Amino acid sequence: MMNMRIRFACPECDKTNVGEGTSATEFRCVHCGHEIQLQGKSASLDCCSACGNIELYRKKDFPQWLGMGLLALACLLFYLFAIQYRYAIAWSILLGSAAIDGIIYYIVGDVVVCYRCGCEHRGIPSRTFDPHSLATAEKYRQERLRREKLRAESAKG
Image (cartoon, rainbow, N blue to C red; front, side, top):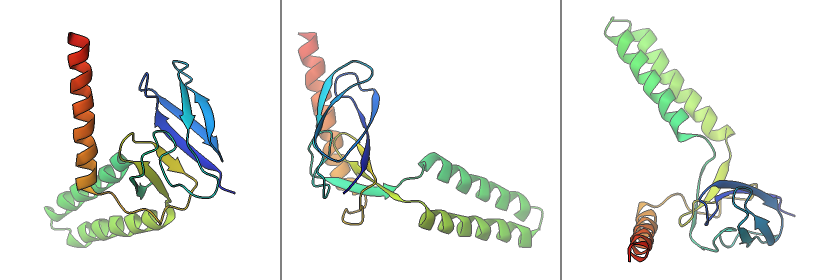
């Protein structure tokens, strides 16, 4: 039996909530009290638990800012040692950071994310999902912009 953990934004107040469970449940936002019907399955993940969207992607469950920060630090150190003609140290830093990145890649698990609402699903088999697709992400970004524009127009008049 799957013990799925999800992290999602409340559709009412847009604050982050965390849920855990194995089947469809009612969930109340801890910030605003809005009731949300989670749509989980016990055997597999067919759709997003928060919004029901079927288009999901997988990514590494590692903070992107931290990975980019480590890469930037390695490049900066490489540059500083290279301009001092200490090429052995410079290349050791660069190749060492690549090795550390590879180790982190194999150690860190995956998370399944919904394109529409950004809900993160952890604790499920993720290899059945494709990696991030820019075309699909752009489709949902445009959908979100249209919704926001309609909401702004209806609030105006």
